[in-house]
Image 1 (cartoon, helix red, strand yellow):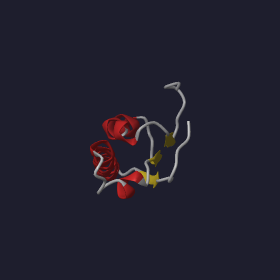
Image 2 (tube, helix red, strand yellow):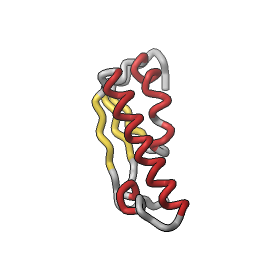
Image 3 (tube, one colour):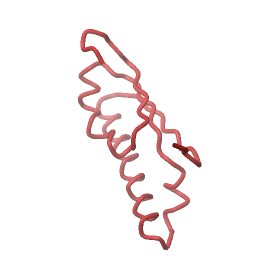
Length: 88
């Protein structure tokens, strides 16, 4: 990304848990809207007996809450997509 160009929208396709730490920097660059990808695993794996699945659900929940808190504090609008399956 060139710092001489101005972008207002960001589509974040990496792990959503990486996003909240970058909201302040994105705001300083002029970003006013973020689209992020999470997963329905937030709901479907929350009560799993498999510890890795339940930890993933907690990680997704914390990341989405972090996005919400940070985005609202910087007046950035956001959308979270939660597909049921992600391939690749």
